[in-house]
Image 1 (cartoon, rainbow, N blue to C red):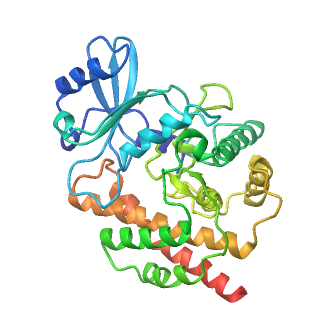
Image 2: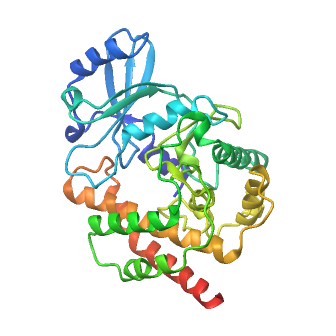
Image 3: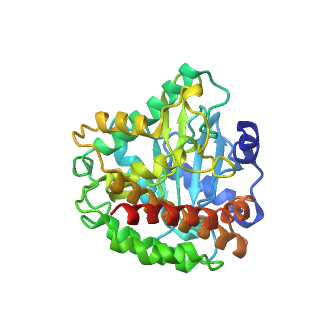
Length: 361
């Protein structure tokens, strides 16, 4: 998918969709009471992107804010946790991880109908195509290095030191995640995918030994960070809906799926000539992260591939959720149906990789 096509589809704003409309006067009254320095006449637009939690740009008094809220309708268990997003970005404001300033969390459905929070609107660049076609080789290298640096910084944060020791359950992270995403997948299932059913049977039996605890983002990628308008510097990491306490290498492997996934629709880089573009290989990128996080031992191929298989299955579950909401008519992106169709080929790719692990064990 080209940069231009992605930018047109997912960036910028549009009028608020009818299914996501709310009472602007109630929001205005809430902000005057809870957002320090708020003044002026409130105007609301909806961002085109954001498949899960509808996201809006608020403008008033020469300042812009962002509002993220739970979508309307029947929701999957534990999904769309805007309260958790608010908690983590508020805590990370004290660290080296760049986040937008958080102003207020409202869990009273009497205001807008669903829970929401308000944060700063950060101006900068969101890069949709991981091949970075609009940049030269040196710039690509700098942008990838910064993307890597910020994820390493996140995984180095001590959760207890910033009040996030209760942000997730300690221990058995992968086992619990396999169970969770199996449940989410089944709750959102829109069609039978044989490879996904095979993965549900396979994943609990091959979990690597050892466990670690860090703050994990859950969906870290180029289009979930905002870069400075001209510098290779991240100003804010976005979309913390899937964040929790978990295994950092599982989180990093999800991020590295970009190297394994097809470019069409999934914004991946599989099959692309990275060397000629100045983009690091998956192995080089992993080695840089290992160095930045102070890991002395390389992860084994079987362990790394398991994390990949699990994350592919997890993404299949996410895509099924998008397809499920599209069927209900309350998905927040008009491209939700197309996203849902990516579930089957991704499940089949994951199952093929799982069989490689089987063969080598």
